[in-house]
Image (cartoon, rainbow, N blue to C red; front, side, top):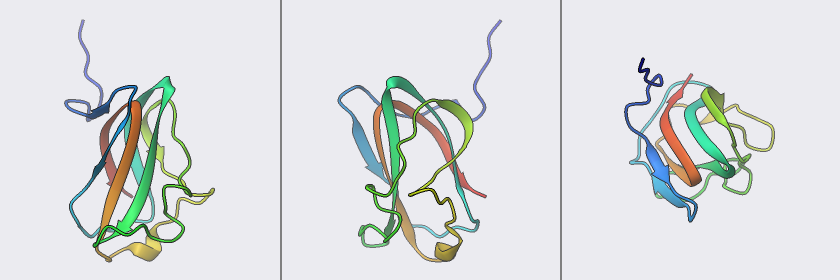
Length: 110
């Protein structure tokens, strides 16, 4: 028997040495960022929100980002304990994703 992970057809993958990616600029609607991901025990994902020019937004920097470890289909991203991104809704942003020994399958705003 075979099964496929929900939204798991492809992933952004980084090995043990790590890697990162920045999205194109876009706008969104919602108050939380949700990800579908898997990491090893030694791996992690951290997410930074940037303005359209690639500058980290206050309260959403990589330093503020909580390290995400595990394997979940629906995980809400937090920065210093808060997941509320509604103040950025309608604003042009980019997402910087930093990974180590991890797969990011999808992200969406709720």
